[in-house]
Length: 239
View (tube, rainbow, N blue to C red):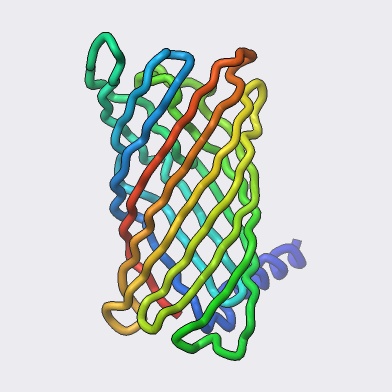
């Protein structure tokens, strides 16, 4: 038991040790603006709705490590307009395109001769895993069930670049939906721009795009595509 505790402390400590470059973006809480669009064979129509706030998300990168903790789905409460061909009605829908718990862990690589310089560059890969919930057929908030929750796993590419006082990060990844009888995949693109305001503290902006495709739903060949576009603002600590 003691050895497990010591190993855990060592791993957590190593995440912050020797962090000569990077930043820690805190979207907990933060601001988020965005729009989700769904094209569904189940309902035979397309509809869209705006995402909710606040956001619970931490995005961290240093010279050695990258990690991301995402619980945005816990807070998603959506107000949407169902854009069917027959009518338009505004309803409270289930939370969508959000992780009830998502985690990414990655290792950063690159030359260390200029870690503290104005043009530091790091590249790495991440392993992703999560438990998510998505609203794919305009179900009302009061009627959402376990059918709309699923696990996921995947890989990601992370690039960090420093431009004098600005810190930037780009992420692209591919995830597989891991729940039978639902089959699908997700491709995500995220960018981060951070700027110092006072000493080591500042703000960051994170635009993101998430494209989910459900190729098989509940033992049927029904196809659902979900596109989520977001813009997040949060507090940031720089190294």
